[in-house]
Amino acid sequence: MDNPFVLFVDDDENLLMGMKRKLRGKFNFDTALGPNEALEKIRSGTQYAVCVADMRMPEMDGVQLLSEISKISPDTVNMMLTGNADQHTAVEAINQGHIFRFFNKPCEDDDLIAGLKAGLRQYQLVTAEKALIEQTLAGSVKVLTEILAQLNPTIFGKAMRAKTWCDKIAKPVGYKHPWELGLAALLAPIGYVSLPPEILTRLGQDKPLQPLERDVVRRTPEVARSLISNIPRLEQVAGIVYLQNRNFDGSGFPAEGPLGEDIPLGARILRIFNDLEKIVDNTLVVKHHFDELRQKPQRYDMALLDKIEAELAEDDPSYDKVAYPQGTELDIYLKHLRMNDFLLTDIETLGGNVLLTHGNYVSEIQLQRLRVFQELHQFHEPIRVRRGGAKPA
Image (cartoon, rainbow, N blue to C red; front, side, top):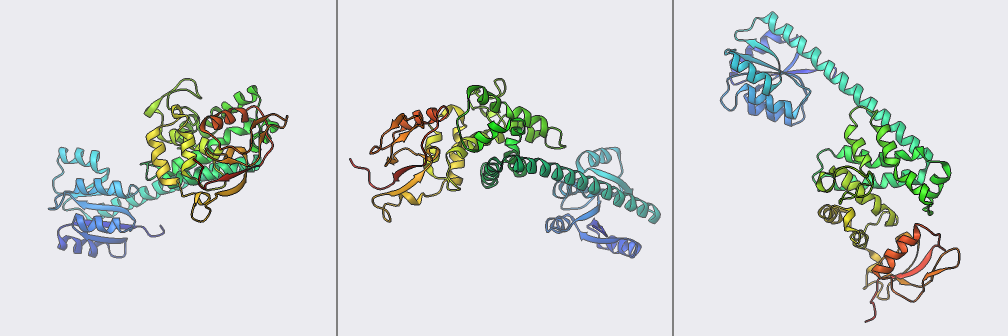
């Protein structure tokens, strides 16, 4: 703000007129006749560098007003004008109203001007420091995300999709700092920078990993926490990323730590999205995806899963029995196979072993078995299925 404004608040209109005469040409200033008008001006979006409020006003006293202003506009430097500067008033004002300076009535012009200049300098220091931290934070995050994008565009694309989901559900699930959740989703896979190129390639192509390789990948949130913790103000994000694979029942990674609702909300959300991402094709999230997640209830906060489903799940056009009474034929990868899909081709490993034959509907047990096999074997893909339509009795 090139010419920051000072706001004077008093219920005495004559006193405000006197302030205007004293300070005209010396400061950019505004006046408010009473606390309600002051709050209305601040809530409308006007940014004030300094607010000087009278202590004794009928609607609310100066301490109450400045306490409210500090919540709405935390960068504003608060000052008080009072004729009752007893110790109790001073302590209450400092503790509750975040007062930078007191002025006694009547106040000498030189003292008032010197105090206002000090308040404006304080405002400039606070906002300059805040801008510096924000720029440092933004720059650090930009470097990390660019490293991830260069390292493996496919993995980065998945992280971007998870961030989009986080942005959509943050407010409905009651997340207090949505930016924190979105950033955690974006940086969740940053620990992959520690992986050998061959493992990264297989991860990007959804190819099976060997047991030792899976253990190395499982520990990447620890690397991510170490990297993110070095950035100011991202301690909470680092904690969320570290616990992203911690199951609701206390299993998973890390082996020791919180369980149930003691796991940070952001980590519980990422736990759901990490698995949801593995079975969602493109951007369409449907009820069947959540039905599959519910087959492993020990992993998730089920009440949270219900809330996320309500926000993300859309109608699947492939199940439109009016438009497609016989169902819709699709060529899909195995990770996108769902319960009740009708197989039009066999599900066969590259080694020639047939796991499921064509001409059958996929059951819940078969799907679970297939997910286990996918960790160990490679299959001929894509496969052809018919989805939706009327299932024969």
